[in-house]
Image (cartoon, rainbow, N blue to C red; front, side):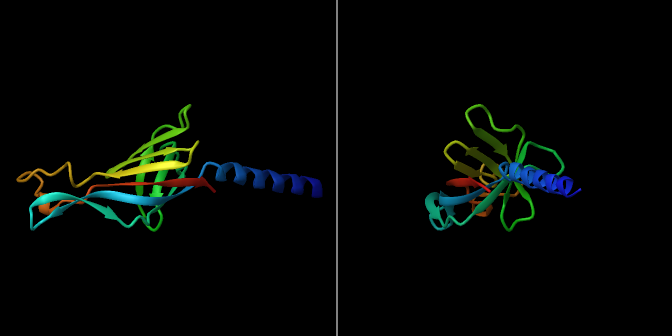
Length: 144
């Protein structure tokens, strides 16, 4: 009986380790983008504080291969339709942009695009002065 319980415990621990290998913690190193200067009425390049952290994991409901969530947010930033390809790349899309990750070198890039390209004065009431600020983040991910 003791051997059965120990064997079951070891199997559970190993399954947790295998599942943990399918999770990644990603930390942004640098962020750069554009902001609309209301005084000059022009878009200008700017840098941002890179403090975003993301978790890549398998969704509980099996709706996609992986999901990307920013730590501290309730919503999913991106969904990864397919798993890693042969090169080790993971391609994910979200409402606001794209998230790409290379598990071989641990690098990711995240593009936050929504609010810039969809500016249509008179149609959606978003103008340059009220649109979101597009930016890119790059950083590293590690399995956990």
